[in-house]
Image 1: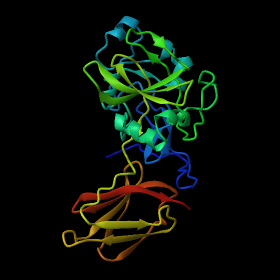
Image 2 (image 1 turned 180 degrees about the vertical axis):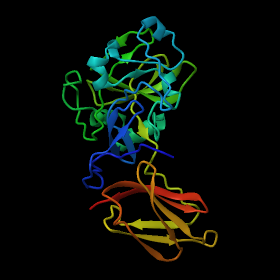
Image 3 (image 1 turned 30 degrees about the vertical axis):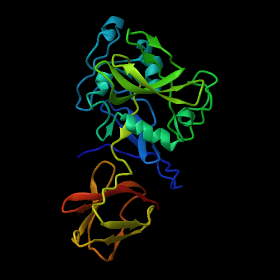
Image 4 (image 1 turned 60 degrees about the vertical axis):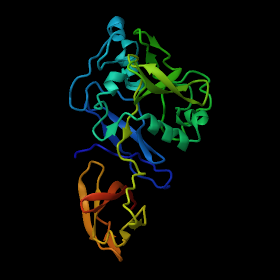
Length: 311
C-alpha cells in the first residue's frame, strides 16, 4: 500500500541527527513532522481542501449555512485564507473528520486515547500544553504561559468557528478534534490556552469548526509477539550490520521472514531467519534515515517497529 509516511528530523530519544522529513497532502501542501515518544505527529495544522480520495470538502463561508451543516465542511478563520490559512491551517467540522479521509494516506485524525498517550508521555494534562505550544507571542496571545515547545510539536492557536457560524479565539486557544463521538451532536476535542500550561479534554458540538493535527498510522509500540517467540534485533540505531536473535518454542519452530520498508511502504530488503541461531544482516545498502521493519511468521506479523540507520 502506498503511504506518504515520513518521520521528523531529530529523534531526540536516540540522540541522532537525521535529514528533515515531511508528508504531503492531496493538495500538495507539505508538512513537517515530529516524533514524540512512540508517536509521529504533523508539526503543523492541517489545511487540505480535499479528502485523500480527491473528493472536495465544501468550503462554507456563510454563517447560517455553517450553523446548519450536518455534512463535511471547512472554512478559513474569518473567511480569510491569505491572512490565516497558511499559518493556522483550516477549521473543519466533525463531519469532515468522520470521513476518515481527511489526513493523507497513512495518517489519521487522532483518537482520544492517542491524545491521552501524548499527554501522559509529557507528564499529564496540567503540563503537557506548555511543552506542545509554540514559544513566544508571535502567534499566541500574551503571556503564553509556560510555552517551551520542547517537543517541537509547535501547537498554534487557530481559534474556532462556533456552532452559530461565528469566529472566535484566534491567538488565544488551539482546539483540536479527536475522532471520538460522545452523542449524536457532540464529539471530543483537546484544547490549549494562552494563559496556562494545560491541555483540557472537552466536548464540542460537531457543527463547530476547529483545527486538526494528523498522527501517523505507524506506532512504534506495535509489538505483536505471539506466545513465547522472542525476537531481538540490534544495534538499533544501526550502521552497517544488524544482528537478529530468534528463539522459538515447540509451538512456533518455523522460520521468520524479516522485511524492511521505507516510509513510503516500499520493500527494500527481506531475509529468512532461522530459529535458534544469530542471523547477520547487512544494512550497508540503506541510506541514513528511519525505516519500518517487520517479522512475519506464516504471513502473520509477529513484530513490527522502527529501524534507524546512521552513517
